[in-house]
Image (cartoon, rainbow, N blue to C red):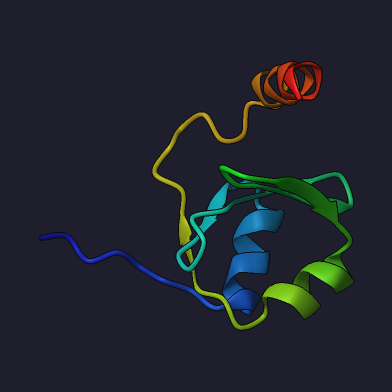
Amino acid sequence: MDQIDTMRIEKAMYWLEQGHVLQMIESRTLVQKKGKMYQLVSDQWHSCLTPTDFVSLFSNNTFVLSQSEEGIDEKKDEEYYAWRRRSL
């Protein structure tokens, strides 16, 4: 079995700055840096946070590099939430 390299917030911030998509182990949330904000996408929610808020809220989490080559598909994400808003 391959060992997965986990990282804490400092190393995660470095990889996000380099353009990588990370996944939080605790919640399976994907994280990607978009401009000055951090975009977080989960099965149940999504959000954009400032760097200060991101570190404040997730400094105790553990991260791994996402195995997905695609990252976060913003068009697909927006289509899903547009459909969801219409159906509720």
